[in-house]
Length: 273
Ligand SMILES: NC(=O)c1ccc[n+]([C@@H]2O[C@H](COP(=O)([O-])OP(=O)(O)OC[C@H]3O[C@@H](n4cnc5c(N)ncnc54)[C@H](O)[C@@H]3O)[C@@H](O)[C@H]2O)c1
Image 1 (cartoon, rainbow, N blue to C red):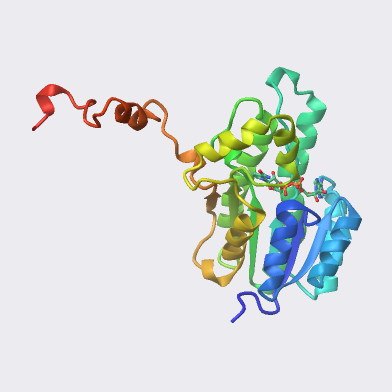
Image 2 (cartoon, rainbow, N blue to C red):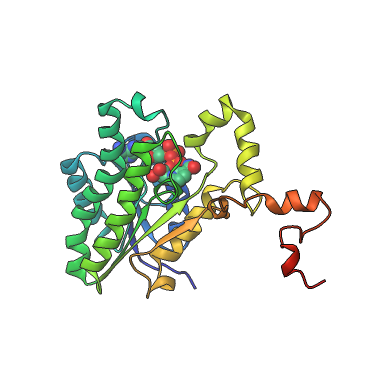
């Protein structure tokens, strides 16, 4: 049986990458999807593929979000699921981040999530049910150097998710998904200029590969669907384990293995052999 029969969903940034995979996955489980994107043509292409509606809007613009969500709700006949996926990346040294770049990254990633939630929540609460899934990032959980606006915006998404979950239960559930590196256009620039980075990501990931968009779309489906009916306010990390690494003793097992003894870290007085 399908997981989302007759569900009505809005997916932001649905024209490419993760968003397009999420549209495909929700539609494959019976949902009708409004594909919202800053670029109309890709939104319409994905919408045509999944039998949904394509709508143009820049999520950083609160008024445009309200109009787009209203038009999606009218076109779909209501709303059950909102996936806030639209986002932009940024990596540069802190002092080389112009204030205008900070504003844009935060206003798309965090502001856009707030704008679309604010536009959709009245209809969800009015209907007495709904599930919101916000796409955050491992950068919001375990930030790296050089991604201050991006990491701050994604940490903000996780906090916004928890706060809204407290406010809108029991009717509406609000959760986030934090992907690790995913094979989309967002990373292709990096991999083209620094091919060795792809290998480094794979080596550091316990599950041994970079995520495909479908890996994230399945987690979104879980949180959007009744399978997660008693889960709200949570941030689900989907990163193949890349953020599990410890700090000081990370890699020590391999070093000890080279010495032929896995017990050489145990002091002599504590050995029982
Ligand atoms: N790819 C990764 O490695 C990765 C990792 C963690 C989190 N994420 C997050 O996943 C989400 C999707 O990333 P992706 O890799 O699919 O990116 P992508 O660049 O491949 O696709 C993003 C889509 O969002 C649209 N978009 C961008 N800004 C928008 C705006 N202001 N308003 C409306 N639409 C807009 C784009 O037109 C595009 O269709 C983002 O929030 C990103 O931060 C990605």
